[in-house]
Image (cartoon, rainbow, N blue to C red; front, top):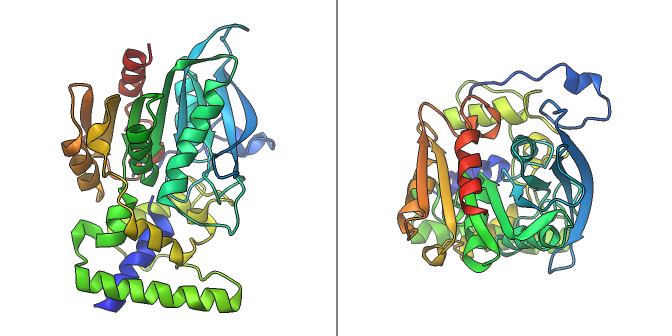
Length: 347
């Protein structure tokens, strides 16, 4: 049983994060363009940095509509995820698409990952990753072209759960979208479909805490297994889906943990111990939860939605979409709906 649990944990930490969308040739012709999606001619992009409450410097890409007037004040959206990805992947795609639709958007790398600071590298934290969203709101609230009363957030995959947690504590957030979300604390503590019981969880904690002792002695941090370099064909379908995004030109990025690296395995300890959706029923601002009909993770979004209260909450299930489709498939991601949601609640 313990081996099965550790194997499950390994899958969680390597990827937690379709139809393949082709990558435009212009991506490779423009040597200054480091994103996994085609560049739009309708937005301006500026690299920015800001600190969170823990003193960690976060690095992001700020997308603004080229049509924006010099002194215009626009609504803004902070975007992050998937879990282990970087701003040059799905979050940047969402940011660019929404900037084309009239929003100022900020796609950022979470603490300890990508171009953001924080040591040791490749650490996840339910507290700090929630704080990262609020730090992005700090930055946007003080940006000259942002209306500070019209700020929303958008979290993809594991950062969908952290976005809901941020909305529960940060009343400056007026609207939240959680796309193809994971509840990272639930899946770390209970496994997929809550398959890990208390006895098995205790054995898992014993293993992880033993690893802490070894990490301290060695002065290094053991890594969780990453995605395989090649598929055998025996993997679960969702692992194949992740591989099709992170390990191919479709979504590969050298700074992405999921593309080319590994989480610190002991990151799971804090995720196991701190349920992030404890107070999600107290969110008074608007929430849109989006999930794929065929996503293995669909139950996270549906269960999270069940806990939300108020007539400004909505669950949208995308027909025939899997988990990874909502990373980059423009035929599946409901940008018209997302735009309408933010225009309704960021006004």
